[in-house]
Every structure is written in structure tokens, then in C-alpha cells.
Image (cartoon, rainbow over all chains, first blue to last red):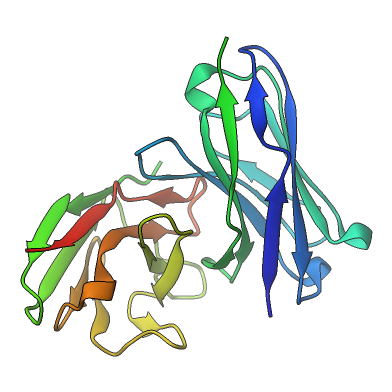
Length: 117
Length: 112
């Protein structure tokens, strides 16, 4: 079955960087666009970024444009989120999610990122 | 950006009674394929979100038929015909394909 496992979360200081990974299994990653979605503590869902199956197009949410970069390595069945110039308000659980043609049909369990001095 | 506004933000329901959640968008978002891609997600406490409904009214496999979605244009509704204890959680609507995709604020459903 479809499995998405995020890793790479942790504690980082404001202004720092972190790279999240999402290992995909149970399906052919190259055939699906993928997303990152986050959830601040006690808050709702915020869509962050999307990448097409072949990596040819990427879209970002307003709050992360210019600071975060989504990428993928289909040969490794892995999705990435490079996060630079992190802010306190970037704290939250980061989910990777599988695209289902203008929707999301599968979610990982999430990885916690804490930005704090 | 397309702003998604849910109401109410909190709902306390007696077991076996119906519940209804509204989701309104700041503009229409009909895809070039002619479909309106409005999805509903359920997030139970401590869990990842799970999709219930896509394309306004299509129920995902394994989703109980007490859940239904409806609407068009800028007004959409998720209904639970008879709330059960396992339905406790937060429900989100989401629009696509206008970039950036956007979620509603979430509606917390609890048992009275």
C-alpha cells in the first residue's frame, strides 16, 4: 500500500536551514506529483509546495516562496523540502502528500520542525 | 489567492444526530476540465489528515456513506447524516487547481 515517511525534522535556530525528506513506497513515485503541507502547533493545514512527477514544474505558497525549495529524486523514491532562512513561524509538523489530480489522496505521518533560539 | 472560509469553526453534536459544515470560497475555481476540485479532509486527534470527499461530492473508498459533499460555485457543504464517536476531529475543505492551493481554517467536531 501507499506509504510516505518523512524525516529530517528537528530544532533549528532562526535564520538556519533544514532539509526534509519523504520516502515513498507502494507506488511509482515518478508517476505522481507531490506536495508538502504543514501544520503549526494547534493550527490548521497550510499548503506549501508542489512538484510535478518529472520535476518540470514547481509551485509554492506565499509564505515560503524564495525560502523553501521542493525537489525530488525519483530514482531514490524520495521527495525533499529544502528550508532556508527559517523563521519562528515556520515551526510545525510538515507532511508530504501525494497528488491525486487536483487533490491529495495520501499523507505521511509528518515530521516536527521547531525554529527557536 | 482563493480564500476558503469554513463555518462554524466548532460544532458540538449529539451522537446519532446530523452535522453540517459550510465552506465558502472567495472566487470560483472551475478547472479547464470543467470540474470543481473541492476536497474535504478529516483529521482525527493525533493523526494525519485523511481525504473523505473529492470533486465536491465523490466519496473516497472506505468512507462511510453517512458522509456526503455537495455544492457548486462558491458554496460547498459537508454533511454527516448521523454522527458517530469516531467522527470526532477537525474537518478541512481545500480548493485546487488555483495556485496556491488553499485550505479552510478547519471545523472542530466534538460529541455533546
